[in-house]
Image 1 (cartoon, rainbow, N blue to C red):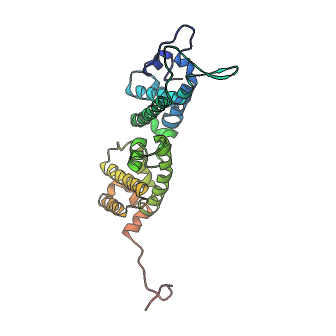
Image 2: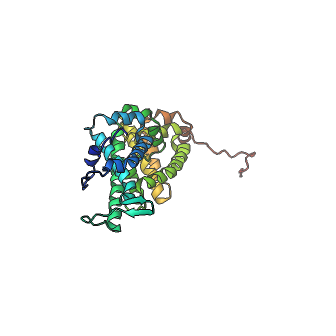
Image 3: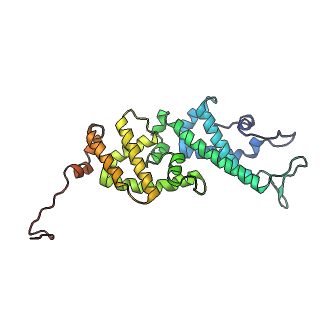
Length: 283
């Protein structure tokens, strides 16, 4: 592992732990496998290996702290249900201590919910940090994120569902991205062109940090149109008309669009001619 390397590092991030007694395994040893799985998930899903190596040293940066908190929270969330269970020759038993009362089911569930919320918050914070890593932009993780305009789990899920969504925020985010991709492809085909849409997606993946203010403005508007359609199950054509009108007034900033077939549809729309050979011919 690269981030949580020992018990001391782990305990600094876990509140309300009791020191181990002589002969007892420390917490790091008990949940090491879950820590490894959590770090692997962060690397495979968000950072990529090279960026994680960069984050690992030094351990005093804000991005290290965010990554470490995410790994620990995710590991504990998976490990908590079995931390007080031991496997004996006769089956599973519960670790008991006369000085500490076992936690109730409700308290454990609240802890799990708290860890899940912390994971969600750390994912959103880590994605914001990653936009400042130049080598992250060439990773498969960045390319995956830039496949749709929905690149912010926290804000995107809340924008569509409010706080009424069920399950983890990340699972809801993944589901929304699947629907958003279909909507964006339809908008690409009829309104913006695929190259211009990818430029908007890259802006969203980098959290709108480009110096081109016109592109940022339109990328925001397109993302809002996608979220509107996800939430209301209908297309906001008034918003799309506003976007096209703005782009036509700032054509120099949207070269990918002006060179696309979709641009021609708005500037040279097909004109119906009443010819005898046409099926719709009328007198």
